[in-house]
Length: 203
Image (tube, rainbow, N blue to C red):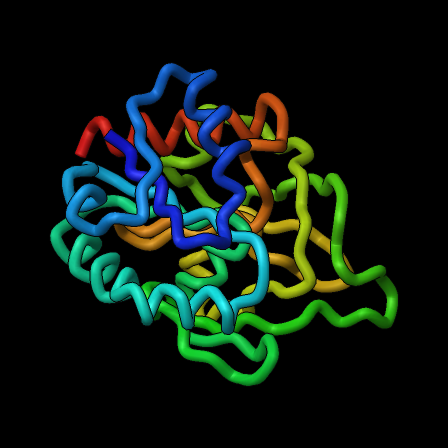
């Protein structure tokens, strides 16, 4: 059972519809007591890092997620949700993140590309990983102005080029992230979500 975390800054509708298309068992909630019943989590996100972390901290969802991940439950962050997995972000002033992954979230340099980055870019797979098992490189849909500068290449599963090399899929242990929107990225995006569900079912 997937718990989709509702903290007021997620694209819950499109994520829910994607899970429904895959006949996945899921529920959407902001209630930590309810979310504790889930076997794994999706943390969506649209908006600013600082605002999101303020809500997660105020509602104690940050501590909840750290405890659940420590128990061995899987967590997938999407877009802003992926950025929140890292140590910190410079968006609207430096803000501490969830700290599951080592790195900083920084603004995409705008010298040669338009920011925000909105559109389809091709993934380049960097290493074998459960999220991309059996899949081929293809285009996925991005909407973002910031990207993760990762401390250590072993975290990056797939990247995309947009003025800089953007970590597009990241993963370490039972924590995963997609900078793009898999729920809006056609067959490849849905296949990545399906792989996440498969990973969770085997835990």
